[in-house]
Amino acid sequence: MAGLVLASLFAGQSAPMARHLEKLDRGVVAVRTGAHEAFISWRLLGTDPSGLAFNVYRGATKLNAAPLTGATNFTDKAATAEAYSVRPVLNNAEQPAPASTPAWAQPYLRIPLQQPAGGTTVDGGTYTYTANDASAADLDGDGQYELVLKWDPSNSRDNGSAGVTGPVLLDAYRLDGTRLWRIDLGKNIRAGAHYTQFLVYYFDGDGRAELACKTADGTVDGAGKTLGDASKDYRSLLTPTDAPAVPNTRDARYGRILAGPEYFTVFDGRTGAALASAPYVPGRDPIDGWGG
Ligand SMILES: [Ca+2]
Ligand SMILES: [Ca+2]
Figure 1 (cartoon, rainbow, N blue to C red):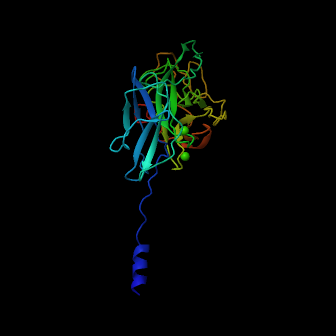
Figure 2: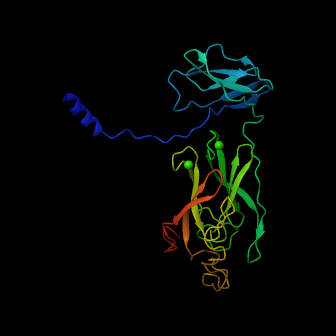
Figure 3: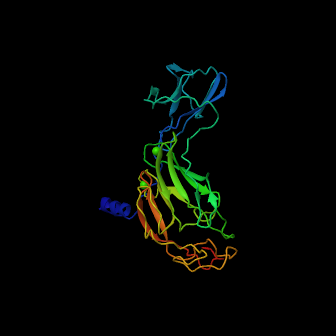
């Protein structure tokens, strides 16, 4: 009887909330900090057992006398061209290590980017692209971060100013510069610092991140598929489009996109393919309100 009562008590308790964790690797980074010196650092993971220590190797040479605890970095005072590895030590037993890591020659990582070609707007203005906001996440689940980068056209506009802009592009890169995909938000998403606040996050908790942002008719996803109706042009121009015309280029509406549907779209992090879209909230009206 007592056992039955206990069982029913436990059945009534809710299970502890499961945390969604990034599944990242050890993340060993080595940086040359002098002619004969290198700084090595690595991650202590939330899933590591307590009491875990580390050995640091340059090539086949172990650099620390006793397993390291209390910090996840080490300075090598006799650096050579050899690469580094960091091996966890649990209960005095050294664990396997991932591939060794060469030291960066400079105190930052160079990532080659594929700068998009510029273009010409309907009113003859030209634009080029510069790298803008970026977000880091593991897009493919291999334990290493990738970057999602927004390309900003040089004619991008703040919400408070009129004008036609070039399209906004979003690229995903591995840290070696391999491009995974490119999304073109299309003519119906205006370029500007306050239009595309993209999110890169583990939305479904499976260890691979997704991208989410505002899209519109004519957005082309990372797999080359067009969202919505590619023929639609909702820009406010001097001649009617799918939106009414405006009288001149000084009109506050000129170049803005004030008509047509907007969507909130989630993209697969590995491929850039659109997974799902829903109406974007808040809407743009009034244009001096939250959504304008
Ligand atoms: Ca990755
Ligand atoms: Ca995911």
